[in-house]
Amino acid sequence: MYKITILCVGGLKESYWRDAVAEYQKRMKPFCRFTITEVPEERIPDKPSSSQIQAVVNAEGDKLLSKLDPASLPIALCIEGKEQSSEQLAQTIERAAVGGEGNLTFMIGGSWGLSEAVKSKARVRLSMSPMTFPHQLARVMLCEQLYRAMQILSGGQYHK
Image: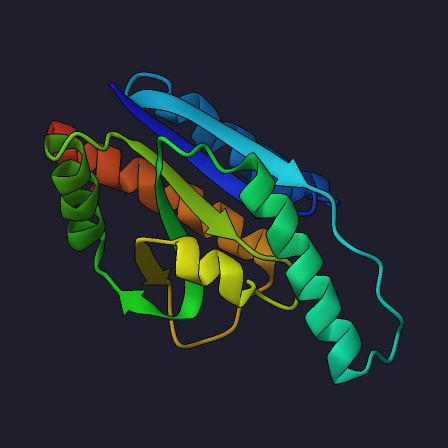
């Protein structure tokens, strides 16, 4: 059975984000052990300097890396990553499992993105789009795409 973790910065403040994620967590139960691990966001001034932003990104990256299971395949969600269709994501997951890496960790940064340390640790870099999304929405979108990938791999009817 797959083990899929979303490792992310910050919590979901609005109930509609939490409800959406909870629904996908429930839907994923038949397919995999699915968990979400959050690390706290760093505080940052209202008008941060570039060095303050970099310090926040690095500190959040260190927190993510401290929670990363060394036995998992680390996947960074970042704008520099490769875009994949839903079918390609399903194939990426299946290839990892066939190669003995059915334990996958998807990492989502905070408002300012992922540190270079996190990106360099990742063995896969994935982009959801060239557009920018709030990290809360990215988490919901990733949950939906992971559920869709599980449906594709199991021959389910969700993905049409």
